[in-house]
Image 1 (cartoon, rainbow, N blue to C red):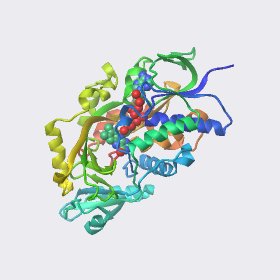
Image 2: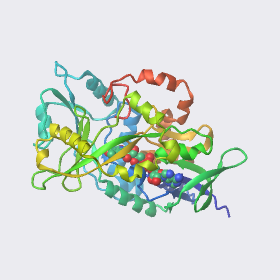
Image 3: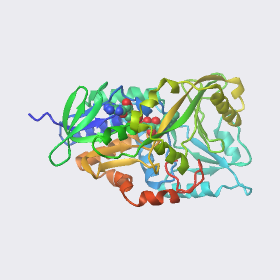
Image 4: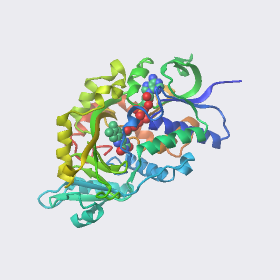
Amino acid sequence: MDSRAHTVVVGGGCLGVAAAISIRRRLNQQGNNEKVILVEKAILGSGLSSRHSGIVRAANAEPAAAQLAMIASKMWLDLKNSWGVDLKNEQFGAVWIARADAAGDNPKWRSLQEKLHNTGVPFNRISLDEARDICPPNVILNQNEVFYHEPDALQIDPSHFRAAAYDAVSFNDVEIREKTDVVGFIRNESGQIDSVITDNGIIPTRYVVNALGPWSPRLFASLGLQVPVSAESVTVVNWLTSRNHEQFKMPIIADYVNLAYFRLWRDGEIHMHQPRKRGPKETARAFAESPLSVMGADFVNDPTNQALGYSQIKQFEDIARRRFNDVDKTVYGSGYRSYFDITPDLKFILGPDHRLTNLIHCLGAGQSFKYAPVFGEIMADFVTGGQAFAPIAQEFSIERFDQSYMSTFWAQVAGSENSLAVGDTNL
Ligand SMILES: Cc1cc2nc3c(=O)[nH]c(=O)nc-3n(C[C@H](O)[C@H](O)[C@H](O)COP(=O)(O)OP(=O)(O)OC[C@H]3O[C@@H](n4cnc5c(N)ncnc54)[C@H](O)[C@@H]3O)c2cc1C
């Protein structure tokens, strides 16, 4: 009997989990009971997926990304249908805030609204009074700002997601190998991947899905493949609030004046982190420093990242004070430095590798928790010949990095840093 797996998914972060579940369910629908094996060197939901904020929103200047985010949002709302398990969510929407010009407008954001409307994402300019009605009273909103409302944005508690991931992997009969390190690959005579080598044995397989996030460059270098993913640092701070004073219906506040996202979570904390930087220089620096070549992304779990220094906390307090009128009456709860996964053009890498076609990449670009269920379906399409979602993913093929695309890229993204400039991707 052939013990070959149908697919081995390497990496058990949110994208690996989603890929394994969707592939298993798709094979079931086709009456195919070949194995789907998920290999994770630590535990499910580790890596960058242990640090996300659980925000699911579709506003994205890149139409294909916005379209995928909308599909994913619907799937998150009904995970029972997609994964067979329940997952709680809160749908309090998001309020986006940016600076207004002298005329009370912000042309970049107006044009973003038009783009999003073309994609079907509800994202509407609202007045200061309307924003005040939507936000709790401790949120400071100013005359010289513009406000947009994304009513469908969701919030998920990351610990609930992790529990649902374990439940769904088990419910769908994905074979899971935690605490198992993938150390290399064996190729067959036609150059395709024949087997995955782990520190717990060799797994022959027809397909490999790469969900290693920023660990990809180190592992795939062994096959002579460059996979351009790096990591950019981000700081997180949680403020403890009083249960008597906070209403637990605060929308996500995407504050592009002070460069911070805020949400309420864990029964009484204001959680905040910076948005991903968009400046070509920062992106280039993350690749130039190339920290991944030596230790993979293992620095993500380095203990020195677990605590913030006084000046970092103070800096975040200053930012929070500009948006909340009672931060001085909250308590610093916890804070840490973490990392966003980034690609050179800040777009995902999805689909078969043109150099090794039974290797399928499933890599996000800094905001991929929210896309996880739809990326899973895209992976299922690619390994079963389906067409439901794969066509939307075409522009995210890794092949683009071989073309002149990258040489003209830096000129094209000449938008200002951390802005919502049209042409920026993955807001
Ligand atoms: C502070 C912060 C807030 C964020 N907030 C949001 C948000 O609100 N919404 C959103 O959509 N996104 C958010 N993100 C981004 C999101 O966390 C990441 O994009 C996402 O988690 C990436 O998932 P992944 O599965 O691709 O990678 P990872 O989670 O990094 O998974 C890769 C996995 O591969 C495993 N691995 C590595 N090497 C090996 C090996 N050799 N063998 C086997 N396994 C291996 C690792 O242990 C890891 O579990 C946030 C990120 C941060 C840091």
